[in-house]
Image (cartoon, rainbow, N blue to C red):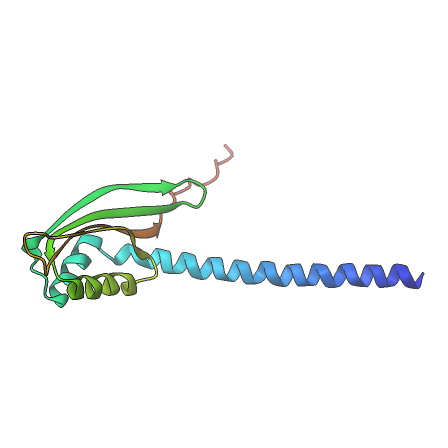
Length: 149
């Protein structure tokens, strides 16, 4: 009898531990969703232009091409992407620009980066990179329940 009580107590402790882990995961998910929802207010191309100006990059030197957003159906998270091309940038300006992009928001990331040496002007680099912004896709409005006639 005592062993049975001990086994049941152990199982109860395990369940309580699992519940606590579940509640923590639920809380973290909610916080992540709130950050992702806040990303809606960020206009990616405008933000990139502003950050480039802050670093001293001439916006006429930047080629930006938005790509079609992609949505993950399992998470309902939409990824907005912009491909950026800079033919002439110093390594210092590039590093500062990328740091500002990455630190702007938890929902913005540099997803790919290709750097080439500029042989015509050795102090400059040619760079292509993709910046992504993640946001929670709006759920379509659900219609009210059908009325009984």
